[in-house]
Image 1 (spheres, rainbow, N blue to C red):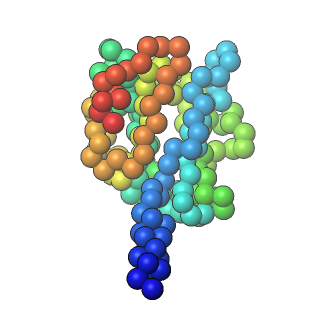
Image 2 (cartoon, helix red, strand yellow):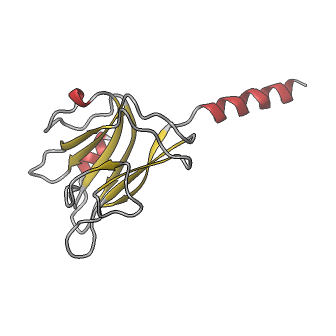
Length: 153
């Protein structure tokens, strides 16, 4: 009986301890001009409110100093019935819930992060941090790795 109780408690702990939002997919480098860039965020449950979260884009190039170049307030949005929230230009199909300009997501050794924070917490050129971090995706195209970003996150 003690083993069943221990197993049940462990199962409850692991099923409730997980991330509420993750960066599910990124397309930052389209053929030719980058007019169909997008970020897809997935929630653990469908129709999840993203109030109180912000999506932050970091420039990992040497000249960028691992600092933010764009932040998007996710307040006022919810994931759809599949638990997805798409951020992209009007050229993206299916049509995104959050619209950004085409060719705004940088290619290279960069990162995108979700924070439980406000837009005011991430003015342009804010250095990357793990404080209030929910999820992060460090990515590269044909550029060299950004070891500093990897060490930060």
